[in-house]
Image 1 (spheres, helix red, strand yellow):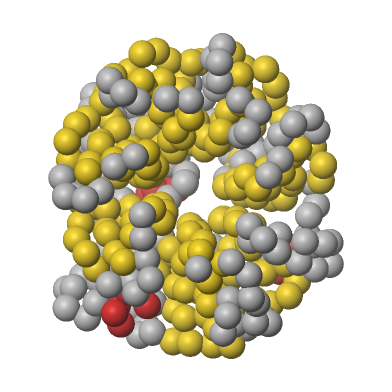
Image 2 (image 1 turned 90 degrees about the vertical axis):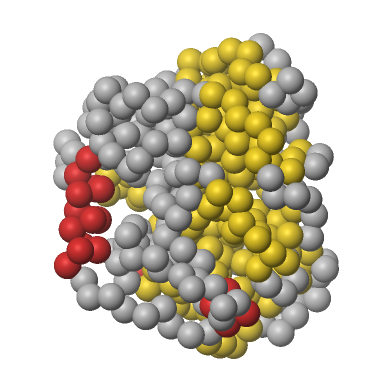
Length: 377
């Protein structure tokens, strides 16, 4: 999950305990949209599932057939007892394999990217996000248990494992509760959140030398960091969740060469994706001051740092979306995909918009749809 304030965790765990155990739906297929013939075969969508309910699922949209299939992992891998696992937190394709980071199941699930057939798993406690370089995968880990504690003692780390053998070959300590990471210019940049340590959040990016796999320094940015992306102009774009009170969620630009913050964009960020020079952002920002969510949709030009739009959905469909949660942009057509987590305990919805922000189609997903991975032909 993307928010770790104390009240949210308590309320979510209460909902899980109160609801009856429901079996995950079997694989289903529906026709949506129009058939496309580009270099992109389709995309996977990882549904996080409610914490403690073991309901993370994997969906797939086929661009050639214009079909959407729900819960494909269970159908392809019927011999896996607990299916995909508890809380899917990241999804990436690398070297012909599909990697799903399953947070509370403490594992990275490894599958064939074409068939979704299970290859194996890598055991990493409280794992969060994954990136790749050469023969290795790099995964952030909170290391300790899920517990809110201002004096939390377990420092987080980045685990490195061989993508051929699936064996962990090293660990590098970071700050507390490290979230997203980015690899650029021979370095790994890690967003330390301190999300379990309310109100003592972390405020730094860890900088790890890729060759030596050792932390070389930290860059102060803002409290409760979450996302990090590198653009083609030598810049890092880093998001802060804020503290849900007086310090709002914001987007920061850093010069990667000097490690300094060069600009701030007054925009909340839950998820973001970079396509060319356009950084697409969606956010559901909770405030304990106003006791409500503030929803944001925006596009930032990373070259000029200008906010190009605060409303990329142009046909009024945003009124139907309760909790925008995940975002992706088709690398060829520039169609925009936004997920709605709704109330976090029932199936969500995936919306597909044209480049102009007009709804093309929508479909029911699993619980808490969040993470995309495009599959190239």
